[in-house]
Length: 146
Image (tube, rainbow, N blue to C red; front, side, top):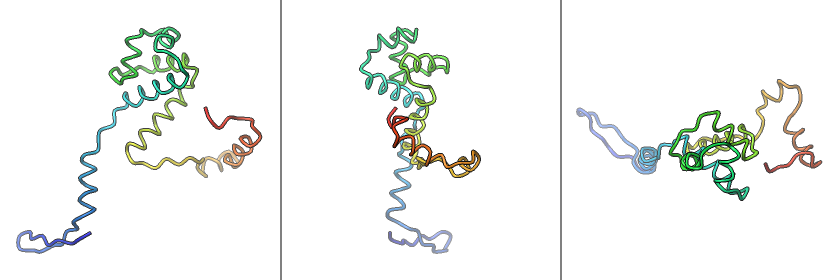
């Protein structure tokens, strides 16, 4: 980073030039994140990972094929009832789908998402949930992948 003199009303001040300017420029160019696009991407990813067709999922969710397609492409804003129906058809909890959407939004916004249980939460319930989950994973009681 380099300092550059800037004169304002006869007063010389020094301004940082270099990486700071690039960072500001990148922030201005950062694309706006649209929630419906992220929801659609997650729903499409889940459906494709399951090897299912739009027709099959739309039939099970009782949603028209065209409307489900528009939701997946982020062209339509789905209601909570519709999202619940689609998630049921995909046999995925709505909370899990929304968690993946949340993680993607955080990444797009440049926010660090901790992957551990906060200490306050663990203290509130009187046990270390991280250790409990680790024990269950090692015993094979729960799956590490959803």
